Image (tube, one colour):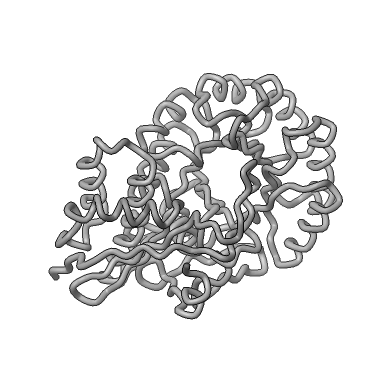
Length: 373
């Protein structure tokens, strides 16, 4: 079957952008997530998501158009590798790579629809049919955070990540009070992860703080300590991992598999966290996942994006043997409302992996009317 890419559209999301916890905080109308729609000669449409402003995505599409126009829509890995290889002169990473990520996800969606298979099977096979999502919340003062966690737990979540906010930015006493309140709110049996958010601008803490904090987190049975150090500090991450009793995680701001290799090969991380909507798509995330597997490291994708990013991560988790968690932003219309199917946890707090062809989700026309800017 000859299925050709006819056009690619960018649809920015705005009006309901959740707070990110950044020092230069996001406003509701800011666009940091852009949907990609790939239209084909056979009428099949594929959807992807990009963790980038829509103006940057549209500009990137203009640069990429001569490379993807009239290309086959059924070879996602080859086509997106072609886009990467021929745009090296624009920089390896950034808006171009982010945009390629959305195209790649959309092409996998198209391939799945054309073959009648879910993307997870096309990525290599399904190790599982459901995955535990961890609810991702911003940190606040202890009492407020505890109330927020209890409310989210009522919806069925049994794993939680708290991040950013005042953590590491005020006092170590407050840091521990926040973690203590979180553990008390969710109980002893639920998973708890802590994200310092050291990729924020002008992070002030050092590796000694990170080692002391990791010791404190171990007392509260925290499953991993995320972004405790600036994102490029490979040697410091290796030192922290060697000293820490808690698993060390990072990688959400890195793009391309080549950026992850030194972290993985040097043993700097227990858990690598590529974001499929900016690292290069499903094709690149899968390669990073298997590289991690080969070095005794685990990949848990970063998922602070959209319902399409979540669907992509669920299929990744299906296809990688040790990727048994996915991130779920709580309270985001871009996750909760974007698809017709919505998301429904089972009695064990797990999300079923979509089984319909492609990504297995349908973008809601009503949601697009409301959320697209």
